[in-house]
Amino acid sequence: MRAPLSDELRERYGTRTAALRKGDTVLIVRGDYKGHEGKVSSIDLSKMRITVEGVTIKKTDGTTKPAPIKPSKVIITKLDLSDKKRKEIFESRLKRRESS
Image 1 (cartoon, one colour):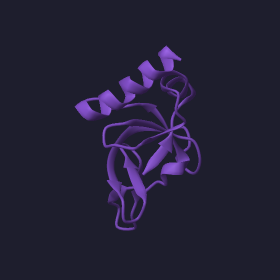
Image 2: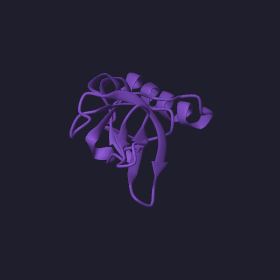
Image 3: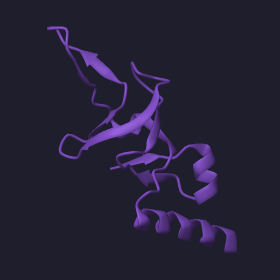
Image 4: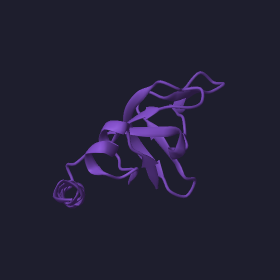
């Protein structure tokens, strides 16, 4: 599941999209939660939806649950590079971009 990168990240890494991961910071750009920024707390591949920290739906009994959001409605503003392989992928893209 991929989402578009912010202009700053797009310029830095030379790619338009990146695979979403838990821990990435995203900005919601469409829908009821437009303008909210938070970390991705979970990814549901079967329903193709993500949940973002702080974005909830109030249920009729008064409790709240995380609101599912389509990945096309968000922009990745900060990548979680704690994974060694993912960091290497983006660093290699950066090196390739600098050498050209």
